[in-house]
Length: 340
Image (cartoon, rainbow, N blue to C red):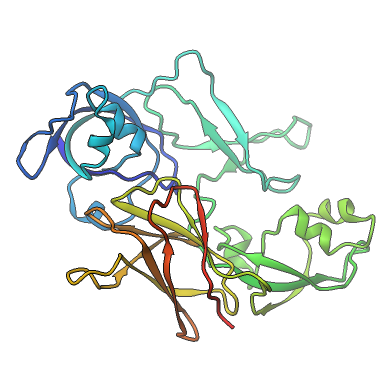
């Protein structure tokens, strides 16, 4: 079985933990084996669905990390294979093999006594979970297995809404409004049935409390609050671009931070270093949250400029040459622009 492969990293939106053996890699332009391919199969873990672009049109398409690309290469030719960009590969699904490990449960940082989320790791075999149930410490009145919903924690994301929230009906509430940043949509349950429902962090709960009563308010579980959306306020900051760790010369993803004003971006475009043949703005896709990406298909020529368009006001900003020559994945680059 063959497919076309781009040298991209995985975005980890949905977790599936599929194991595949990548058997051979080829140069699709010439339909022959790439000179840097070792021809030996390597094992990779596929953790999510590719969100669009060639993934929607190709029969099968994998976005692999630079590490996976290097593993398929001849010794000393790892960088050459990473720079190839698009490769045709053969692949086959195999059983998950975590020899010596047992299933591990990583409790999500946002969990509390009333909400529990967990990442399940190192399942041997096919790696697919059909259902997960949770049971509390057994008592006469509590000896059941409620369904533990399998769902993406962040299925759809709002970019940095700022709200003022306050609570007043609990004895530990201060009644004073505090500012919070809402970064995603709540995925179901009361979020689907209530007119408005916010899952706030323990820090946000504590900020609404009277001094010394932060833990009491956190333990309250569900609170009635008043809220109002306000303009984002990042006084003294300019818009910053944090390059995603999986970016490479053929794929560019960036987290956009500290937008003043309404905080919503309607579109993001990227322009490479201007030449006579290369002076166009290329539309980026929203990957999730504040992450925007471009599957370039060819090597990007830096420095890179980024154009931002506000979803509501339509105001456009250009961060010219904000991503410099020699940019590195994981680095942040601050612009000199912002809204307001």
